[in-house]
Length: 254
Image 1 (tube, rainbow, N blue to C red):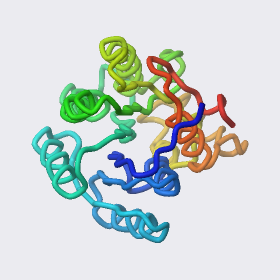
Image 2 (image 1 turned 180 degrees about the vertical axis):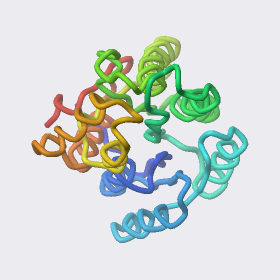
Image 3 (image 1 turned 30 degrees about the vertical axis):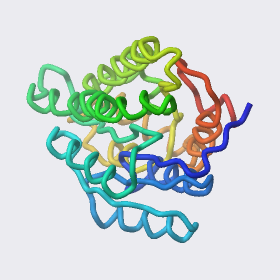
């Protein structure tokens, strides 16, 4: 059964471009007011302009997701401007550091985990009390198929680790919140033509590893990447349902 999202408020991370921007636009098209979070103010302003062109309000909150103070500030500002957040889409992620694990700086590895996992949990925990009090909420954590096959992306240990842990976090939190009216799910968007794979293709194969570079170069050359609009539309359809504790895939609805 499809549930209307009209009049709800959402916070979307990584909303300046790619999947995050398209998710914000899909939500706006469904009548949702959106808070847009990412590092780049210029990109967020462009997303906000497109949201407003659809007749919905948009609030821009630049933040470095690797800094907990920034996250807390973004939540406070979103609540002050838009009221309590009903929908949280944790989309932002980084794929660095790449290369042989023994050559990776531990600080960079930890910084990636902070963005891809710790920030997700911190935002969820900050917004959960109000969701539980109202008896309604949606939390979606954007994951990756790499979580199911971690060995398939050699040279991206931090990314694979973070996404696998993200899905465990998602399913555990969903079980904790069962019956509360707040749903928690993970979403695997597929291979999408965004800045992230383009950045990998632009790296030196000798530094990140030839197999990793070849994998991303080949998927692009063979036209295997889908547009960001496809996973965004799929995610919107899932958000209009009451299921929780699931790992959604873009192929479920496309």
